[in-house]
Image (cartoon, rainbow, N blue to C red; front, top):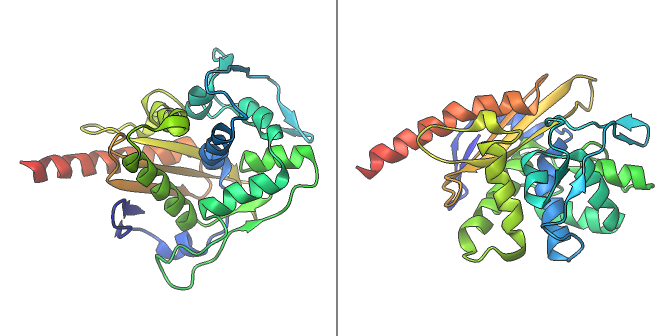
Length: 260
């Protein structure tokens, strides 16, 4: 799905019924919202580096990072770029369950988008332990949303990127989203002829042990005009990012022609 950032109008879509009705775990696509709140509240310092631990077990579940083992410690921006589970599971403990729930509600994960009629609404389960809180902050437990809700949430991020000259506390989040496409885990989404920023997410399906993948992001990276979401059943975030790249490229070419 492709959405116009300024108007909120759907520009292109495929399988809109799935986007409106399917409830899935969002995986790592929620990390920018978690980090933004921690930066805003002063509980994370953007330059603080946190060691990536492997193996990483949370509540008995193995959650090792997929980024290169050569990346051993990360600051806030590169934690987004490399989608480091160790970083986010560490900083998530600085929040309460109620605060995390409020972050997701503000993002729109429990509200209809209004983009289509008869859409499903996301669900949150209150964490009862620290491991559940950490897994929820990774988008891997206790949170299910529709692809439309995720698309709408990233449109709001794009609007913030547009409206804030001095990004202040949010700057590391936007830098991380750009770096994710430039050299991080969403590198497969890098387009030709324009720039993009975005995030991948991989999680187990709600009704199947097989994973599904998300890519969601916007272009151009510094002055967003469109926001794009790719959802792949039985896929991974990096696979969804690879689908996004030619769409961003086609948009860039169209934008260039229109400016002539």
